[in-house]
Image 1: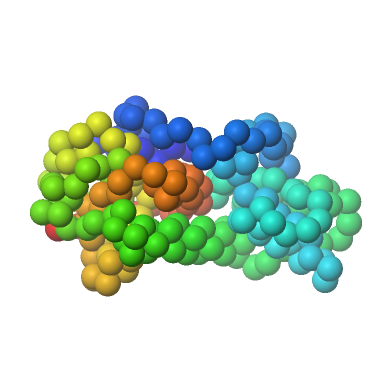
Image 2: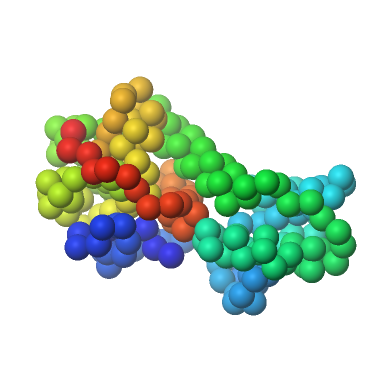
Length: 215
């Protein structure tokens, strides 16, 4: 699933604009539900902890045999319903309650941590006036933004990728504000990492709520 914004789509998916290069070349991994192989950047790794609990390994660092699942809420729900983790692990396992919601929270926190780091490094700015003056390598638009914000975001992005994976309140939290509709990031490693996490987040999210005005 892509999270680049489509201006005529209420759920903000897919704008063919300025693709970011991948962070690194990696081997493909196979989804335990669909059997389809894909880039690890579009999937989530799980391991079974010593106590038998299925544990998300978002950083891909935990020891143990990895089980890979497409970063898509429907796939997570199917994995739970079909007992796909137990089959992949070839043993009895315990799946955390409300796994789709847990994954969404974990990926959201990783993405917001990256955005906060970018802000502290001077690589991300929020607010319409600051965004207008920024050298944009990546544009973030609140997924619950109103029509006015969606109509002007292309001009602000200037050809840079546009992501719509976060609510206005979530973007605002990274800047110490109640809300932020526009955030501009400069090109670099942080923007590349955030793009990966935002795409995974978009696949795990429920639809956005009420639209927000631009700020």
